[in-house]
Amino acid sequence: MKTFDKSFTQQEAIPSSGVEKAVDILKSGRLHRYNTGPGEISDTALLESEYAAYQGVDYCLAVTSGGQAIQIALRAAGIEPGDLILANAYTLAPVPGAIHAVGAVPVFVEIGDDWLTDIDDFRSKAEESGARFMMLSHMRGHIADMEEICKICDEFDIILIEDCAHTMGAEWRGRKSGNFGAVACFSTQTYKHMNSGEGGLLTTDDAEIAARAIMLSGSYMLYERHGTAPPIETFGSIRLETPNCSARLDNLRAAILRAQLPNLDNNIQCWNTRYRTIENGLRNAPGIRIVDRPQHEFYVGSSIQFHVDGFGVDKIPAFIDTCLARGVELKWFGPEDPVAFTSRYDSWRYLDNIPELPKTLNTLSTTCDMRVPLTFNESDCELIAEIIADEAEKQIRIN
Image (tube, rainbow, N blue to C red):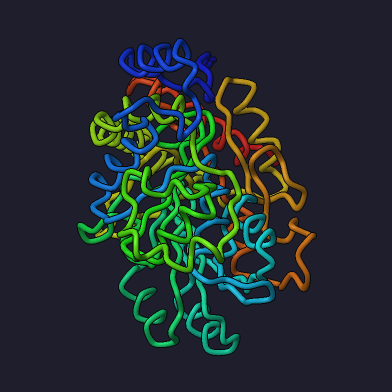
């Protein structure tokens, strides 16, 4: 019986240029985001300029985590305590955590069988709730129909904030994910598309949102030192009315990220090759159902999702266990109780009035999820798919 022996949590090494720069910064002692010599531009500011250019936006702010980027984005976009905010129910815990942290109240929107925001439910809840904000998570890299999302936001005067933790470098109809709303948030946590251990990026074309975000990140009155700061006059009253929260990224992690950015597009192609290898290996597997992705989506295949609905839900735990025994680590979104990074919306019990979302629960009940690290090669991916298919077939044969 074949087994797999590589780690699903092992990332690629940081490029040597990033290691060398990080060592230089450590030797200098100038780790703080504003600690620079005369005439020197910090690595944090340089990262902000370089990522803004990559994303094709006016402003970028580098912060300490993706969750912190979301909190800052919400406050910079105008969220006040008690405000309602629409949010798709399929996401990871830092998203509702950020919403709760700023005092907002989520109105959860159903997802469909394809893990995308249910457009009809979004429209209905936008009209019923009167919410002025939408926090759209492109969860696990799945991008909803952005024309429809934006149309509804325009119709009901809703400010769109995008969570692009899993879609850095992805596109919808040739437009980068993150460039549809007022502000977007990215993560550079270890398992995302660039790795700084923890870190995040916020992007926008709105000068006032950028100014508020910079102040919220803890700029003191040093906002001119930011790589993509808006004009000084934008900070007029904002600089006095906005609290500082010390959340901007340090120079050490910025240097590590700068070394990775030039390789991002090539890495995306590598991820997608591995993704398609696994997808093709599972497409005709008994008990496994692959969902075709929208033709207008250019995705980043750093993880793969599929439905296990060819045998009873009660057999899924055994299927997960037998795959793991052969070295293949799958996550299941079905259990009510959270496990590791995986949690269902109804487990976030610090929130009030958690709704019943039958479509979402039905979808998650058979959803399996798996990381696709770049440390795997195509042969590894073929073997992984073979093991998953074999274990699914065994469950079907069990009476």
